[in-house]
Image 1 (cartoon, helix red, strand yellow):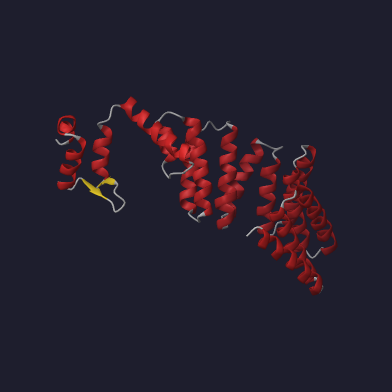
Image 2: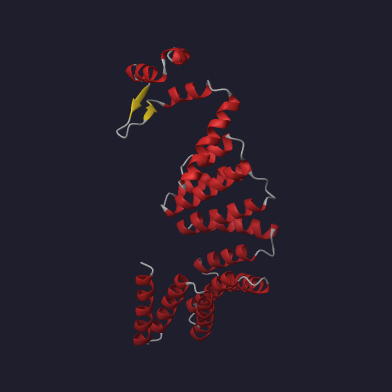
Length: 274
């Protein structure tokens, strides 16, 4: 009833009445919130659909202008009818959730993005890869990751990133020969397309494959090749990661002084980058 007469009684008085009846509450920072989702839903559904879409667009645009990200940003763009922006927001939200170790939330946001995409849309492939890389592999859900990647490889046999992901999973579960096959295929494609960052990633995992099998000379060859490439790319984080792996190999060979020297270099890189 209060909502019906807001135009005549004024917004401030209406909010006071709503608070008096326990429909809204004021937070410590001065914001007004509905006391229950059902109250919010009742008010929301009273708004004419076109006006709702405009309001969602204004909220989403405000977050973008401010450079902030909101958990409901994808939903706002979706309700505003902006499918492409909604997909981008859902995928960004999935990545942020994964970084915060909220893996179930990350998976739900990827699902929200996929629900808006045609399976043949290239962004659908990106969404599946994001799910595998930032949720399933991190959680050790290798069977499910393999199932998804096998399907993606069937549909995209020349995609080096998918093969690189599959190689990582096969390495983790000890299927080294199959891992090497996928990683070599990825490395060759990366080289052919001049994707040096991808090539470095494939080389590093190839080195890890040989390292895990005690083929230390072969592992060192791949590690050194990786280190040369990431130095050329000026990728300090990748340099640190590669040097740490080489230090581990030196330790396996009993060359502790060389391992310590490398680890000092790794620490220097981390100090420089805070």
